[in-house]
Image (cartoon, rainbow over all chains, first blue to last red; front, side, top):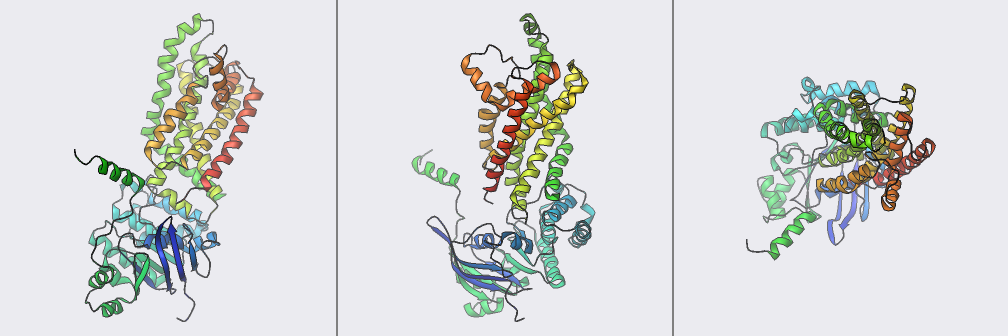
Length: 268
Length: 248
């Protein structure tokens, strides 16, 4: 395992105006590992994923995915990863099969391969029987599974999962991670995930990075993090590293207007 | 090329599946044809302008095409809200092919809707002067569809909220329809109105259709076609440029 890392992030800074979302972050992800990126809301997890998936450019520093810079080799980098975003990105008016098929075309997967692999993945994620049903009839867990299956259709080297289990029941979460782990073993796909559920990270991730206020505050295996912080659970280690204060997600412009209105009309 | 095709197919499939939406979208045009057409018919006749249904049918077809094409702009808003837009934006394909696929899909749906209204107009008593001109009229319909589907893409690229679409409907789509001469003749209009009707691309589309279908044109068919084609090219470039600026 001495090969070069599949993801390399070096001294990356990303600012939005006066707000610095990611502040001098560096880490490597080795090919084939499951890497968890943990942090409170607004810590910079999604911003980092967006930079790695070519949707944002860093303000400074360098990123590499499979040796390529996402900013300058957009198309090549996009071929190499699959991504499941925090918010769903399926077309709910189409069937599961059609969603897979469109994805295959967008990623230039030859028709024959597309069909075979769609079948394998849909069966694996237990969606094969429902392949001709419209996605809008699917439950939250099924949608999530379909998104992951779709993200794997073009045999990516890296799979990004940004809070994939948000809003799922424990059964669906458990089943989803089982699938992800077996795929990681079977196909050697590198998994880069974020989650708020510490038990998930503890269970599936080989290595964990904890990010807070745009900086990495700890990195290592779950055991190492517990040892470093002198705690006996990852949750306790996480709280020790990031504190117990509640973070607000960055508000939208509308929230700003509402806050302003509240401030000027205090009584009702 | 398959990328353009699959995104085109997506739009068409979704249209054919949305029976309720198809029926709902017939309401407006039916109202215009049935109520306005027959209601104003006698007045129109007495003014020496001939049959109002004959006059108005191309206008109502144009209206259906305009509304349906512009609706593909709101579809983009849905895709943004429900995420599918992002799936296409991180795909390793040029933005241009995504935009072309979507726009052609939206335009095709608009042509299908126009064809549906055409049939309904025939049932209501509309008679084209000759069947031979019908394919040519559909060329005009296709041009109208491309013009407004591209405009919808351009606008949809910047829309972030539902309220924005209301603005577009009330301050752009409705004026385009009412200024197009779809429901009144273009001759002898007050100066200001005449100028406004000439800025409206739909005016040329409806005038061209009327010229072909009932032999009545204000600008002449060659000018109508030239303007439509020019505007279509312009709007496709504009739409592509706006689409390339979308941030995921």
